[in-house]
Length: 387
Image 1: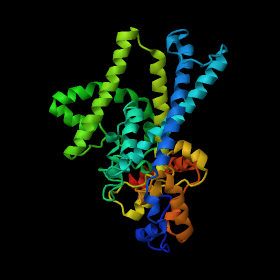
Image 2: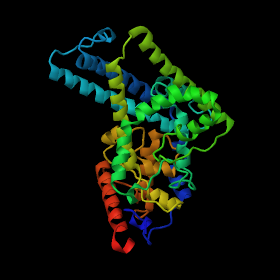
Image 3: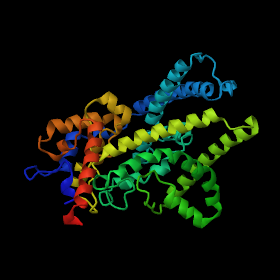
Image 4: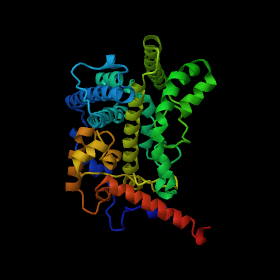
């Protein structure tokens, strides 16, 4: 009954879905990563985001603490005298910084799917300029690969799945509140938990299982990993710890007081990024499974593509994440080829094929549908027949 409540289903007349046929349609060329696209996209977005963030910090210093920390002001940044204009500049530069920082942060999704030495220098530079400073080293997202394992998807071994379409709507609201508490928790995890875990093995196990995964299921337990993965994890968390230690040392040894504009701006930016990602996450699936393991066809139908409105779509689902159903079909296709692959599949698969049932027009419509299904499920479960 639960799976039948999904908004999109395979009809009895639908032809059987063939991954092999879809693979032939897509072709092998679209699985190749274009290094120039990765580097250009990342570097340009990082530069724009950095300068927008620097401007926003300067405006924040003027707004929050008047002349405090004006020595941090970058040369060439004009400071409006009008308070309303100052707020407008602050909000504008903050939003610009958040959008571009969000895009470079979501390259983590591409990185965890890269194999071997593919774009190894790019992955290193991403960690230096984004992963470590943003406290999102790639190891926290390695569990994403379990989300793509057919036998794990939608089960308790999938930390990125919750049957929100079958739960009360208040759980959706609670999910959307997590961006406000995650930033300080991440700060505590890397600055305090990391050195403690080095000396207490039992605490190390707790940190690994409960505090080292970018997931949405609060009860998820990260499984043990091979020695090579543990070494990579140790190196990345060491640099996150050193980065935070450096920031704290600068504050205490050179300033003598907390840099409130910097802290407020960092927290605001993190909350906006996490909120954007939370909304994207809610729209990535239909969240209709609560019965354990699903067939691959059910997994595909539970995932969503947003092929329309590419400009707006790339703002809230950057780096190809608006083609989420296609990504679950072929996780190895790099983000810059997903649009081409989607158009090939639509043009060559029968109209009634289940792949063509994975699309949604807008994120807003998908979120309204999720909310309505959650309300309907609650009403059904609380009816006298089910009590």
